[in-house]
Length: 78
Image 1 (cartoon, rainbow, N blue to C red):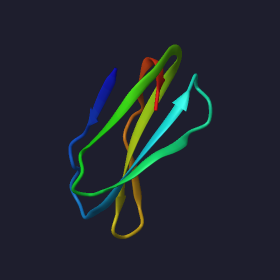
Image 2: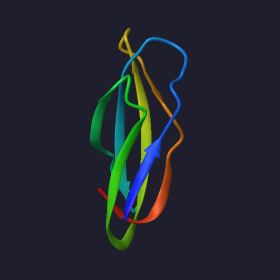
Image 3: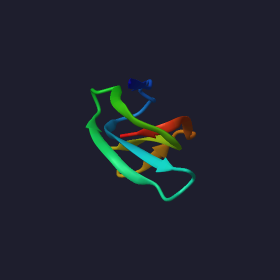
Image 4: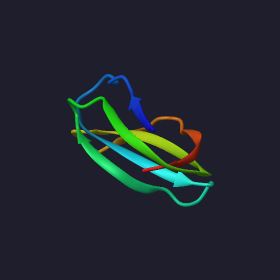
């Protein structure tokens, strides 16, 4: 199963997006860093076990980072 994560660009001079995952409430790890023009990332479900949380952060030209509220789905997505 492929899941397509999408988001809307926030206001400001965004240079990149960082996608992070957390499994069963554990530590966050970086899944991908994407250019500012890319507003989607596909992930594949590899197992029905666990729970995968995602969060998307916008990285701005001044170095600041804006992180959206985390969301998740049952299963292991990578």
